[in-house]
Image 1: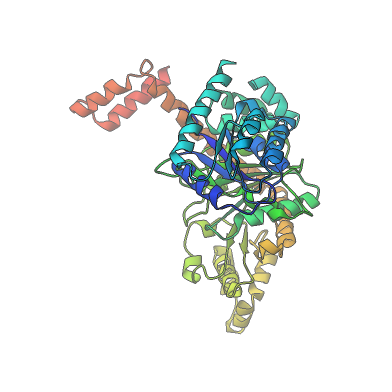
Image 2: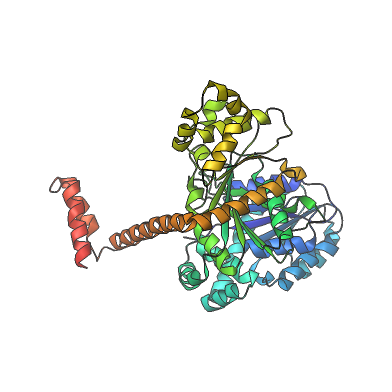
Length: 141
Length: 347
């Protein structure tokens, strides 16, 4: 049997807006995923360490503070530093992200960006497809 | 990472290896079984502490505070926190980790080298822990943590599986969770080696403490002590002095402590009680006794699993054909079972 998809839903930095993250965490739970929620105000290092210890398939970072270009690449960098393999994980960013920044985030290793108003099904389908592809690539190696 | 790398990694304190091993074990990959076989000789040193209690009583917060306390005592700490998996979708919201360190900048835990936290879904299993929680504890034990906390799901009255993995079981309650009848019901309130009334700053904590103490006093030996008391001693019962007297006459009387976990009140005393209980277990031989009992049950369960595996392979015993005979009335279920076992023995 295929193992359940494990997702870390993270809030990083000085940003108290957690309604979106909680709603997403809840809907991902209902989609059959195992969701670990970090709570508010974690540092990029802490989020990275949680991703490594929990051995998640997906790291979803919710960010409304405008610091996404600064913080998201740090999370990915520290995962590597803590011995994790970002190549095996799917990175998602959700929140107030200007379209002009999409390119830069994707270059930093983000697979999907979801702004307010995204239907939850779109996120679920994206995760299922992206995780299946990652797992297939890992199995091949 | 392959099995060799993971086993080496665990024995050399590589957290990534431990994390991956847990994934293999939790998801019943063949690699998981292989890893468990190879690390077993390194297990048995950790003090496994179970934390259970109804939803919302403060289990995760207590675990976080205890972890900070044990870090101050220079112990390393592994944590396995179980939350319920949905019986409908299989999904789970694992919300124990977020209590870890409570953003207390003086005692941060998330990046602490001496702390490893893993969330687990119960995956629909009743009993309060996941099927593989015991094996995950074993991986952490082999890694070398001094103390391993196992936090159950928010438990109901009969979710007592924690005693299958923990050396010391802590039952946490809070004020106003029912009267003395609730507290004397069988199940979760029988299993505590230590009882904690958390949120003791709320009204009614003394009442809950008193009921817990009288519940503990109601066991056989205690009744002997009580039967020797007279009306004159009623005041002693009321004041809890009998409880103190009992403590002197028995090896271990579960202490009843009060805490206000989010403010850290009572945590040091709780940590002391945990260490005292471990000393008692070791000194009295109870630790070995408990572990023997658990292992014999575990090996028995594994034997059953192996037999089930054998039965599912049709070429060993033609199980399906035998069932057909029972369905057609050519065999009765008891004779069928005896026949199958006889065949298995001859293998």
